Image (cartoon, rainbow, N blue to C red):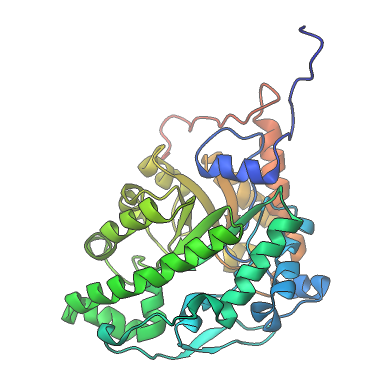
Length: 364
């Protein structure tokens, strides 16, 4: 029967299957190029006829705009939660929804005591959730073979929105028990968000808790968040991706111990060092610099940066976070092009990707 069957070669996986396999550190026909945060730009808004701020609160416009990541940039995933206000807005934090060229933000902090906190009975019916859950349902129906990524802000980051960053971080020193209580009461709201997005059709959840070196020490992550994150990864009910901004090299080992399937990391972290730390305990995705490479650089700059990250053996290439709105679509196209070219060079049997080992004496 040797000549009677077709041998799989080239790109034979669907983007959805490829993304999920890479997320779990498995076999892929091509290293995925992705968005795990937002790749929405002013150009994309014009293409989709869906602009900020309306696209934050209208499911159809959100879905149409989010789909440009796959339709126009050929990325393997779509991520429709463009902003950071999903949970906080539904918890009654006052939100300024921004303008076409400006991101939403919390404009009034409403919580001063964890004992005053209560999840509204209609939490998942609030405007921010109606838009996001509706958009995920639309995208799941329209793109059954593309990876759909949801986004949740964890209780540490929701605490920033509800309490204020300065107040929250000050209490980590002055009243740590109060912070632990904030995390305890806010966690169910974040978990409800994750479960609702998975039920709506998301393939994975990117969980953002901003506990990077610029804000807290690695010991503080260990003492306040490690055990809670272990609980999250046990109970989230689907593939999990941690996002933490900034320089995080000194706490990546804790992230792996928390049980996350993947870490979406920033360009301040050397991908070779990160790979050495995590081994095969979790996947690594992201790392392409936003302000210098994507916003201010050229297609060639981005292509070269992607190749360096891919050569470090990351499981997927993506921007380090939400790209600046003025980023050019032409530059973002280097993400998919570089992943395809790298994969074509590293598919020795024509079927699966094999990463080159790091050269002797390298950091990786």
